[in-house]
Length: 297
Image (cartoon, rainbow, N blue to C red; front, top):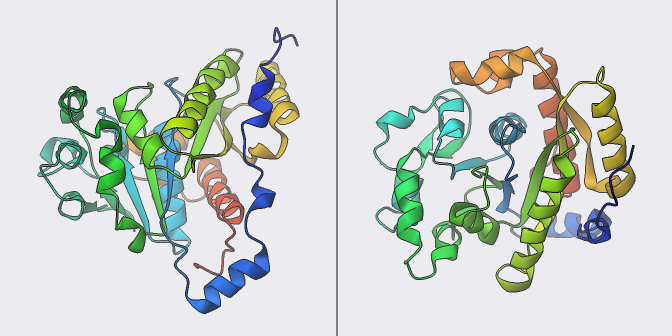
């Protein structure tokens, strides 16, 4: 399969998770009571329809099911992540919009998912107006980062669902985050979008958030019967190696149905392939962050 030459900078733009603190070091921190909470990860891809919101909602729910304290931040004006965890975006008293514009404190805008064991900073179409307002606001790209200060003391993980574009809202998420998780559908044009996103991440690393890392690439909507899907998946593994999550999210009817019921897949059909896959992703995600399933610190 010919790709016309993959940009070589892509291969070296990913952090090596092996460089994380050693297991003994983490154990010392745990025993000493050092705070290791509050890792912020945004789920981003400027290409729509790749399972971005599905991943944000179900990774959050899966981490919560494993005993982690998690906050889901919806920063997409479509509000699909909000609806997907059972919160009605049409009946919000406060939202991400109010927080970004400084009209509401973070804690006052957070709500509890009525269906799952995690908190949500909900969003709706008001965010479109917020994006316009941010264009002339001071510290416009740091509004979310400033709003989340202190939240790392209450949550072990904060997952941000970004809009499917590289706009001011996504910029806020990337500036606030410690890591970026990139859902990628295994199709021919996937690497083109990946190249643009990694370029953006490199620019943010050099100018606004030097601590930003790429959490990994997640293959979504995978159909092993499709030859092209398998070829793209193999190419990703060849070029990015351990930077690609081992977990693969399959095409799954039950996974597609769950959002219409306002439920994460774990609560809609815990025996489905989608539910099993997202639990596996949560486990792998924790391992990459130096945690095990039986320890939360």
